[in-house]
Image 1 (cartoon, one colour):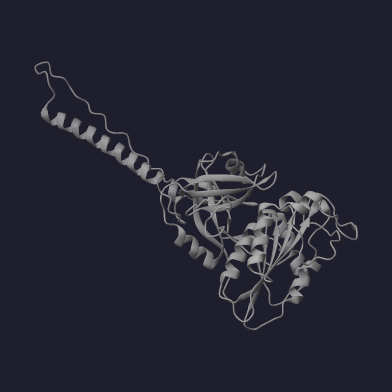
Image 2 (image 1 turned 60 degrees about the horizontal axis):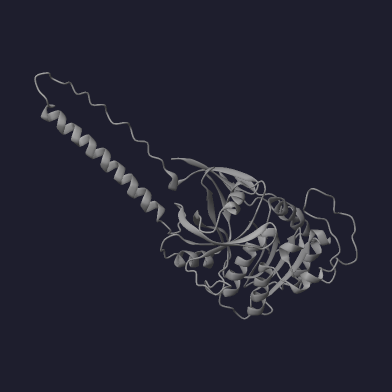
Length: 385
């Protein structure tokens, strides 16, 4: 087996890649043919062995060709081997983020695989960087209007991903260097967080591209049959720049006083202005792609989705007050469960909920720490992505 390195934020792991098995074939034996001066041809037995050797080598070559050709056509998504997809489009969201749309390279029926993952909870797939033999997990965005693009074109079995160009990330740099039509190998799905049918209230704390799992949570939570009380989700979305959430306006915040930030390269603990600066005029009239999706979902599920935006360059940061405002408003019930899900860069997760831990080759949740641990919340399930 050929090994490859799995990279996710802040950790590396060696795994065996089932789809990258390399078989090593021994060199064929050398046939020594002695020429007899009394005859002009080889003995019949030796001619037979020579023909068998040629036929065997030819059959082995054809078999290797057909196996490679068959593997290149494999577009059935599964968690054991890499499936071949094609990059359909790469649409910029900001100067660093883009939405990638992929479709199977060959006809495949992946809808059932997708649907089973959606019914379970938040899930991801692994992208392979073939030159360095490393992988990185990315979270698919929910489908747009049952697989129809904003341009109106039907893309069967397509998947969309919000991917940031990380100058230090080998996989993200590789993906952003690809041209439309390029082949991309992915493997999955991998369920990252189960959301049980009993969950009725979710507080999702997202940093940067961590908004993608939040959109997944909306898709999972609000599609289930509603009981007497409709499920609700409140999202606290933090970004470093306004361009990443262009046009986003908070639903519940009245005071955006500057708070301490999770960003480790600067002290932002100083008191800020009474209110955060208003977005520029262009931000008020334009909306980024992810903000538009959130607005459409809020219109589709009125009263069930609320979003508050925080932007470092506008001196607005998530504080304990924004968390407790939602948790205290959620009335406890014995018939429902409540979750707080944190997603984003490793430093963001550590600041909000504490570190994950490694044990026996697996990454585990670890104890709850950070801001959430200080709040002493009860009857809330905390999950770090």
